[in-house]
Each structure stands twice: as C-alpha cells, then as structure tokens.
Length: 262
Image (cartoon, rainbow, N blue to C red):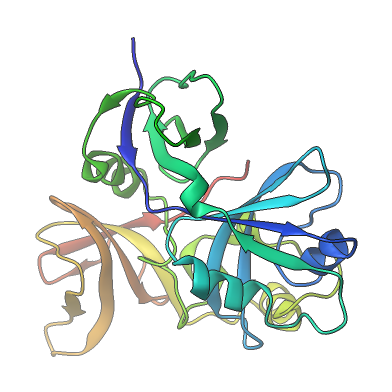
C-alpha cells in the first residue's frame, strides 16, 4: 500500500549559530531541551499567535524550522525579531527541497527527511525530498486530508488560530510549555493557565457551514464564526458560554477542538 501525498507550501528555514538553541528556547512556546522534534508557536507580547513551526534539531546542532502557513520572509522576520547581539543566523532553505504532506502509510524515499505529525487527526508525515526526486506516494488533493482534520476536530494555524487568538482558545495547549521559563508571551500564558479567563472556544460544528460564516442567535446576536469547513462539518470559534449540544440556527455545537501532543 502506498501513501497518499500532496504538495505543501512549507517554508523551510535553518537556524544556526552558537546561540541558536538558547535564543529559540527564549522565543517560542515549546521547551526545546532534550527533544529533537517538536511543534512550537510564536506569540506576540499579548499572547496572540503569530506563527506555528515544526522545530527539528539536526545532528550538527542547527535547527530546521518548518512552517506550513507563512512565506519565508515573514517567518524569518518573526523568528529573528529579537536578535540583538546573539550569534544566530536564519537561512531560507525552501528552494532546496520539494515539500510534501503524506498520509495513510509512512513514505520511504531515498534522501528524504520524514517527520510524523498529529496536525490532521490521522497518520500523517511532513516530508522533504531533494529536488527532482519522484513523488513519495500517490498524488491526492490536500483538501482530502484537510477534511480529515476538520472531522477529527483538530485546529490549524492560521485557519483556526491566528493573530487575534490565544492558543488556549483554539485547543493548542499541547504546543505551549508552562514550565520552561521566560519566552515572548509567557506571562499571558501563565495568567490564562492560572485564571482560565477565556471568552471564546473553538468547537466542532455540524450543519450547513462555510468558512467565515457568522453564527447568530434567533435574536440576531453573533455568538461565533466558522473558521474551517468541510461539507457538513466545521470548526467554529464561539462564545465559551455556549455548551456542547447547543444549536445556533441550523448549526449544532460539538466538543472542543483539540491538538494532540506528540
């Protein structure tokens, strides 16, 4: 059985330098100590989500950052915004690779870099292959995999969680460390953890849904917005006061969206 695969617009940035490990540790939400592969969020000072990256520690001590939703220039601006006297260099390596997302069966391609991911609710892998190497599986539309994600209630950056949302609102706590020490946005994360002061939550929804659709009560009050949709299934950011099973118009609210830890 061959894996299914789709091309991905993944940005690939390598971070090098003597201060690379300490610098990255102090900027993103993930604890990079004693791990070689993890997911991380990059927050602003108000704790809102600017970017998501997969971070891979290479054997030479450098770090590969894979970003599925931002162009290289924008990602490098976010990652290096606070470099002052640090020995840190970010280099765009996106053109050196063919980028794929594979699912169903783990791909095996000579010279490829393959990392498992839980971003889609099914067995899936981020794949980098040298330019010119054949497909790592049978070609399939990415929409097929994204529908699996929506059905599984798995949030995505930036479709469901972006610069106006906290990670906790969107079920992304698995990508946030509360024990690693200081990083950009850490104080806000700690305050949310201790006080639980959220006004919105990302929930699965079923019914006639489309991206951007406002969910309104019979009185016309907007209580949520659909962020992802696939057929009759979706994910919507709604008021935390609306319980699972509530019906808004023709849309039924389900369980909270949740990203699984690696």
